[in-house]
Image 1 (cartoon, rainbow, N blue to C red):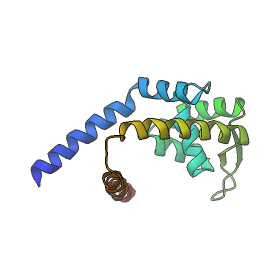
Image 2: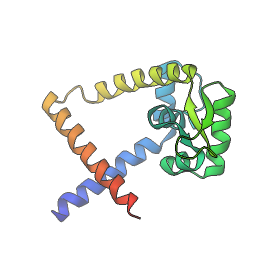
Image 3: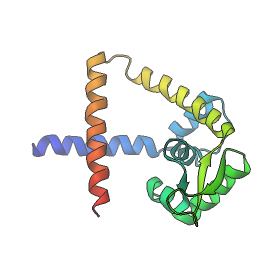
Amino acid sequence: MKKDIRELRGALLDLTGVLNRPQPDSALIEAAGVDLDRALFPLLARIERQGPLGIVELAELAGRDYTTVSRQVSKLESLGLVARCPSPQDGRVRAAIITDKGKIMTDALDAARQKIIENLLSGWKPEEVRELSHLLRRFADDALAWVGTL
């Protein structure tokens, strides 16, 4: 099992390295046909999927400094992609929520991401894709639960 875990760690490091490179983000934005700074789109996607989100919570989820995220959310707001509203958890906090314009953009990004992933998995059997999806979701859920205990 130690060897398998070492291989898993190596694969996760490789995957993280790919995801953290600017080129895939730029390629995704280009494929989606949208005009957006690549540093902003992961925040926009999180707000769309998990919003409304306060700045501190969004920064924690994105692994970024909250002052940076605050500036970036202000930029998204100035572009009309997000709006601010009272947080459902704490009315004193202003949370970011997706706008109709932002939803149109995330839909375009999702469609482009779908095509990219379909191309990456084109040589895979459907059952392999299902198994990967199931196991990755399980691993991610366990990792999120563990982080929640820290």
